[in-house]
Image 1 (cartoon, one colour):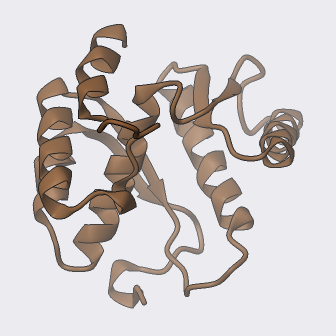
Image 2 (cartoon, one colour):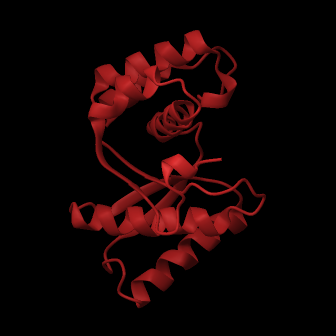
Amino acid sequence: AEEIRESLLPLRLKGQIKLHWSDEDESRRRKIVSTIAELTPMTAVVTHISQPQKKTEHFRRKCLETIYYELCGMGIHQLTCESRTESQNKKDIAHLLTLRRRKLVLPQFDISHCRGGDDPLLWIPDVFLGAINARHKGVTEHYEALKDFVVYDAATEGSLLNSERP
């Protein structure tokens, strides 16, 4: 992990706290994707496709529930999520505790939160999500360069099919 962090740090521009896909132009996106593809990260992806709406926390929780379950099945018991607001982070933890009580995740599975600028590894999911969204908009090159590093790719229950995507 430390080697990957060191490889990602030079991608940050002067004054930039972290990489964020939507802030990058196409040439930077290509460079970022190329760098990540050289690192051969193993990535699990869970998406939820719905009609556009303002309230997305429910869908985020459904994605997290799915990824927690799948990571447990892979023998992974610790996940670091990008920190959001303190109240949102607390809701993530409360959600995990509920899933543990319902025995939907193993008791030893745990999450922590970290600011995106404090750990370059958190940039990787943002890049994958950006590449996936770009693919749905017809720009496939980024996802094509990364797809071989996806070890799990699924949509949540209730997600629209790709053909129904808005």
